[in-house]
Amino acid sequence: MARIQKLKVYRTPIGFHDAYVAAPSQKAALEAWGSDANLFAHGLADVVTDEALTREPLEHPGKIIKRLRGSEDEHLAALPAGVPKPKRGKAENEPSRRQGGRVGSPKPSPEKPKPKPKPRPSRDALEAAERELEALEKRQM
Image 1 (cartoon, rainbow, N blue to C red):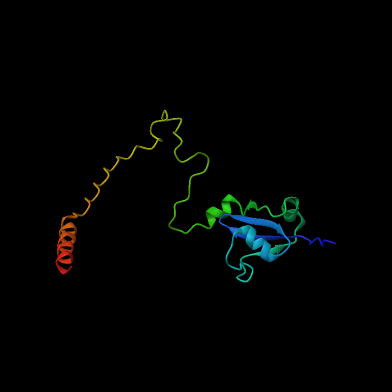
Image 2: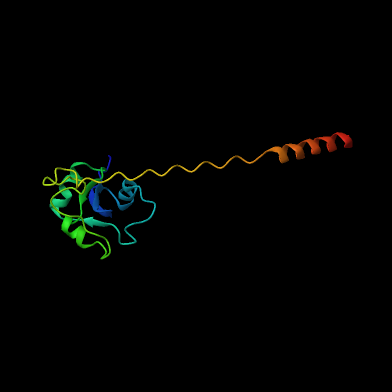
């Protein structure tokens, strides 16, 4: 009689998301995530017991479920001090209504010409050496 293993839900951070997977073991979870390292031993993965977080992964065993970790405000607050924070309310390249849509639009940057490729090295010296080697081999025969 086949024994059915109970599934557990595991979580690991991936970028701004948490990746959840329902799997029978830690090894199976690591395989689903495509990890070569033991994320559990490094403290980068754990078992999830919160029913709200386990519902969707248990409905789709073996499938990775990604959920945004934190809010946009929390992500912006975590930026280093020297990084400019984006303005709220409109997209970065959205034209200003008051300006008729011209001032807010980005100016095209001049395209830099592509550098010319380096010429291939001359084979003249190689071919001369091969001819000389061939002549020497003929003399020794």
